[in-house]
Image 1 (cartoon, rainbow, N blue to C red):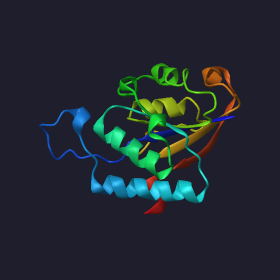
Image 2 (image 1 turned 30 degrees about the vertical axis):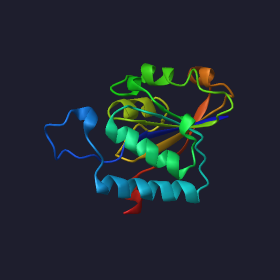
Image 3 (image 1 turned 90 degrees about the vertical axis):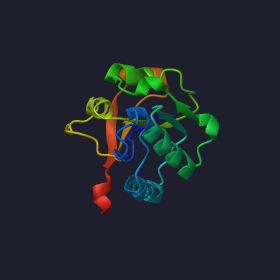
Length: 164
């Protein structure tokens, strides 16, 4: 069994219009919402062993928060430029070389890509994955490279508005 957690980065700042999109930092509001998600996941004994993240500042900062909260070793946090602005097929490609001993992976990405990818696995499609939102998908396989052919089910969806 492999579990994939799909997360949209925390709420970011548009305050500095001169910043490149890749360089936008997180807002305090985004940090607070992510902490709510972390608390919920920890209370429910969620396991995260490996984190894949976009190289955009807002995604990378979110990924570091999550990795720290779940005691993910720094060697198990991988920054991938291919996650930023990817299509669903490109996102699926991110899992093929993961260590087989790892069973619980978090991917931190961006809309619309992360929502489109999540909808690949959801019976009831969503319009968008909100910032700091997490969707967990369980796959009936022991090999990451078999994800595209494996059976799957939605384990849970959790969004910050559930706690506000």
